Image 1 (tube, rainbow, N blue to C red):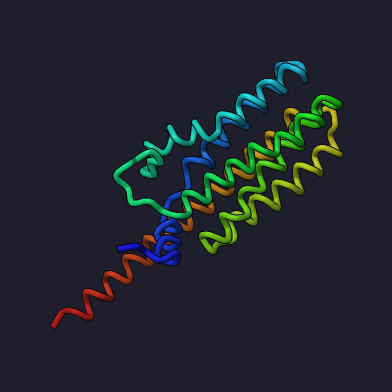
Image 2: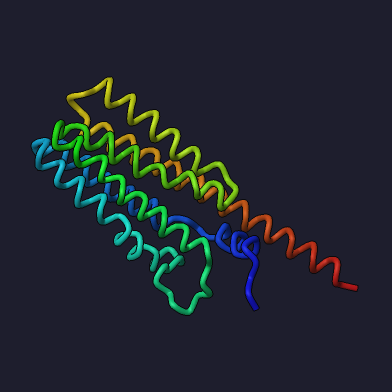
Length: 197
């Protein structure tokens, strides 16, 4: 029997959402470390490679967070397709980042940092929670601010900001998950009380 979009949305919203933020945290940490030790040109290559690997790293991490994106036994969910479209959207923004990078290599943390963060907005709509809006808006504002205020530290400060936004996002997801589990326990207890004689 085909599930409605609302049923699929409810199911999708129950997920942990840890694998991709953890992957982003790792990738941007690598970018920040490269910014400390490498020239701008070499740090830019690390940024291209590390951010390009976030999806693959997320697929790997998902095996350990219980999300397992590659599990073929799971029932298909329409919102997984939407997520793939947002990933493609993030990849397409490199068409903006690369020309600016060719003119000014220090622009790369700004363009990639902001443009790839936009994929968090649809997630907020899907799961009906403010975490994606928080992530996209705070990331954008702080990255732009850092780009203007600390031009000599763009490859270190901007990745640090993005990592910190990811850490807060992961914390919010954990609190949300704990609330979901607590609410589920309360509902189960009430159901048991209602059915007992």
